[in-house]
Every structure is written in C-alpha cells, then in structure tokens.
Amino acid sequence: MPNKIALSIEGLTVSFDGFKAVDGLNLYIEENELRVIIGPNGAGKTTVLDLICGKTKATSGSIEFRGVELTRLPEYRLVQLGVGRKFQTPSIYENLTVLENLEISYPKGRSVLGSLLFKRTPEVEQKIMDTAKMIFLEEHLDTMSGLLSHGKKQWLEIGMLLIQDPALLMLDEPVAGMSVVEREKTASLLSMIAKGRSLIVIEHDMEFVKRIAHKVTVLHQGKLLAEGSMEAVQENPKVIEVYLGH
Ligand code: ADP
Ligand code: MG
Image (tube, rainbow, N blue to C red; front, side, top):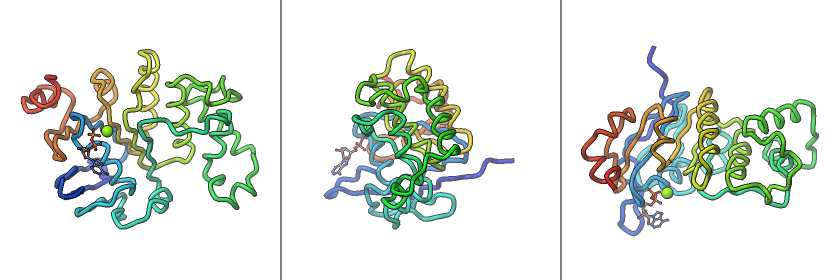
C-alpha cells in the first residue's frame, strides 16, 4: 500500500520586492517520512519552512497539510494543527531548568489561563520524563538551561516541540555546532521521532543526511533542482555542480 501524503505543496512562490526566494515549488511529503532539504546558501530552504509555519505569507501557491489549506491561516492555528518548527538558534528559557522548560511547553501550559490552572499531574510528569529521556537530558532535569552545552540546548528545544506531539516537525540545521557523538545521538533521535509524524530537516552535514534521510530534496535559487534517494541525488551532475562539488 502506498504511503499517505501528509503535506502537499504546489506552485509555492514568495517574492520579496520582486526577488523570488521560493519559485513555483512542488513538494510532497508522506506521513512518517523524514525528508531532508539541502542546497547552497540562499537557495530558499529556510524560507520554505517560514512559509509552511506561517511566519512568511506566500505570494502564490498552496500548502495543504492533512487536507487543510495552511496558506491563509494565522500562525497560532497552524500550531493547533500540529505544525511545529525549530529555528536555527535554540530558543529556550535560559534562566529556567530543563524540567521547567519542558513543563511550560506542555500543551496545557500554553495559554495564560492554562498556566494558572496547570497542575503537574502524574500524566504530565510521565510525559516530561519520557521526553527528557528521549532527548538525552534525563540526568539534567534540574540544570539551569543556560548552563547546558550548545548541543544539549538544541536537544532541549527539540524536546520542547516534541512534548506538544506535533504532526509535522521542521528542524533548521539541528546539528550545527554539535560534536560527532552528539550528531550520532541526534541521528537516532530524529529517526525515532519520525515514527508517527512527518519530519522536515534542513542540513548541510552530508554524513548526517545520509544517516537519516528517507528522501532528499535539493533546492537551488528557490526552485527544485533534484529529488530522490541520497545515492541518486549525490550522483546527479546538476547537484554536484551547484552544491556538492563545492
Ligand atoms: P537558505 O536557508 O537556503 O540559505 P533563505 O531561505 O534564508 O536561504 O534565503 C533565500 C533568499 O531569500 C536569500 O537570498 C535571502 O536573502 C532572501 N530572503 C529571505 N528572507 C527574506 C526577507 N524576509 N526579505 C527579503 N529577502 C529575504
Ligand atoms: Mg537557512
């Protein structure tokens, strides 16, 4: 049985003062798929994520997620629909502990009223513990987040998204600045969390991409340059010319 398409992007274009950062892009991502987007700097990778999560409004085209058109919805609605996004630099609360960061990210803690009524029930505690374990921080629950290494901060931010059970998770260069060991652990983390949701990862580290990608999309000048298995993409002369050869 063919896998179900979760995210369907057609003719997506955004123009900044006449410059098309994303230009007529078609992209289809399945449920439980881990897709990696690669391409040279300025190719439009981050802008694609900005468009999907509603941070940037499309000039034209369509983004449909599980049958719902996203392009005209405000950002908070996209969050409710399960669209989660991690930016290039970790955005965590440095003066709170790991546990507190996870706790405030738990869905019921999000609204003001929710925060006031928030109780650390056994169910919430279990979810926090499970998440902390998954992101390799179970020994650091009481550590002030600002004291974590850069890699551990990245994991914490992934955990803060995971605790919300996103249906579509997008990560922009998640292993930038990580050690080799941290990269390996992140690879297994991402492979695990792609079960039950779709994952889009932007990454430059080709060893890492090889380990995690189900399929690779190559962007160049806002357009789709190539798409397929890592092997096929690596052998593609156009991809070698504009990206991998450098
Ligand atoms: P990548 O992530 O692939 O390196 P980006 O998506 O960040 O590329 O940027 C693609 C192009 O769009 C770049 O030339 C960038 O300068 C331009 N761009 C991105 N966002 C904006 C914006 N808000 N206004 C104007 N130009 C932008
Ligand atoms: Mg970028």
